Length: 189
Image 1 (cartoon, one colour):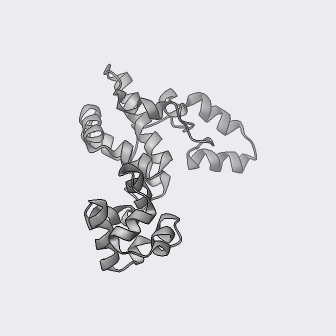
Image 2 (tube, helix red, strand yellow; image 1 turned 135 degrees about the vertical axis):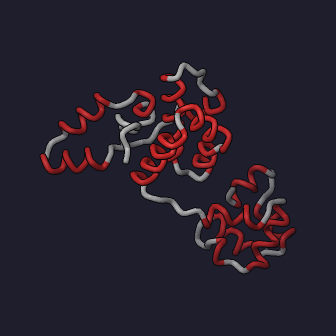
Image 3 (tube, one colour; image 1 turned 60 degrees about the horizontal axis):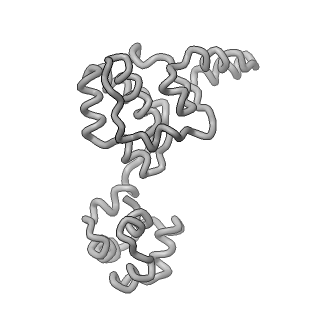
């Protein structure tokens, strides 16, 4: 979790954290506003903040260290994982790993919604009840429609929106609910 999220969770102000951790308010404010990155702070600063926020230094630094891959690569990795594990083990792995909530808390919305759509789709085709832990997320969606890069390339090469319209018609409903156009999750290399 980020410092602002931890502050909200613990009902603590930046001022109070600054005083209790002995980290200057200006430094803490810059960290919360993204002007300064926690990974560039001294170990002493990270230690003091982690101690006052009752988390490990590693947990405090995790949002800074995790690197985001391109969305197309993410989708490919998810589909490969599904192919490797099979439907039921994939569902168990994703739900037990709390990946959906983790992506959402990091504001990685395309990844969050893609994974949730995958879980909902696999649940439907396997006759499994939908996990209600994510009902709050199901009413949300991406602001813009997210097309596969192959569809975007085809539309650009033809100078036409017809490939996009066809992709939307062929899209799996669980994905389209989140403004993600996806029609094939099985045939991946």
